[in-house]
Length: 122
Image (cartoon, rainbow, N blue to C red; front, side, top):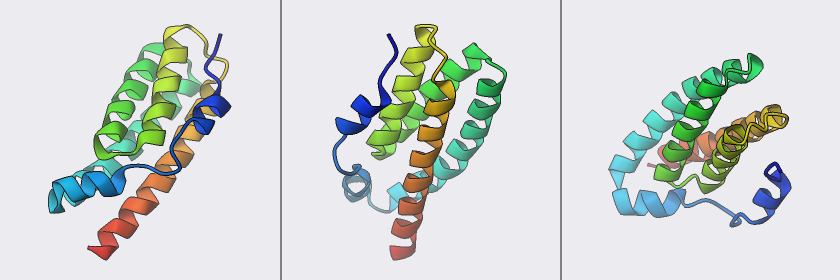
């Protein structure tokens, strides 16, 4: 049985916790957010290549790392999408890997734009 992306999406809170983590960490959050955007972009490229070649070990590792990174800054939806991909990979269910990748990439773009706006606001 594979993880249903629609069930994950419907169970998500309406937004993420970026502002909450920012309030807790203050200006340090903006530094962490910059690193998250840069590192995650590179990891997404690696995940994309691994997915296209069915490199299961790399797919599992990168989805796990992205999940932790996203969770640490409050990007809960992205973390859940990465976790869903990781769990499907562990079960040997790769048929939705491209869908997982697209969903994660789209959420990353949304989070990166929001972090950029937070950065601009100071």
